[in-house]
Image (tube, rainbow, N blue to C red; front, side, top):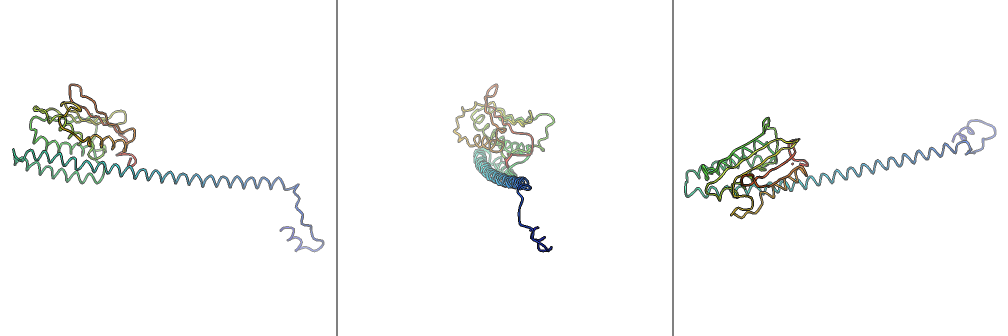
Length: 269
């Protein structure tokens, strides 16, 4: 183009259209090499972005799946809780109708708070302990002085600032009473505790009842299995449940979950 421009602007013999490869061949080679490198770099960046988007989408789908499973497991606990509590009310109606009426009113208040908390999926540890206390008030209407309950927590712990999945401890309390203590004429003791340990939160429910697997009442295993699955789905390997014999008799259920953060990871509790 430059030679054509010169030929059109100046008279005389035209300059021949010749390209001297011996002067420009090296430059042309490196220009094409640079273009090839740029092409490969752009292609690699596009591929990396595509893979990253694909991974993010896969993670989002997995989070949605885990959240759906967690919601299903949590929703299964509400009928389980209602069924067991209504059994308690039924046992009081014949012997003490006035007390049964008070229990029904307490149950109504308890369920109102429970339904409100269930919409969030997680709530404070203090709220979970409050649910346990309310439920135990209902059970103590049936057991009376035969049921002795103690709450324990480590010094410096503020349960209002620690978030846990809704209905994590309360089903374990139900199990301890129904399968550990209810078959004993003398009743027994129940311990509910929480402490911080090595960056984790440890929660436990203990009873001095008949021992794990020795209850005369057949159970579906729903409470324990759902609790275990919720911990695994919500916290991965950091969420664990351990069931062991209690020293001195009875059963100890220990839950371990990460203390950092305010709830499950992935949505994952």
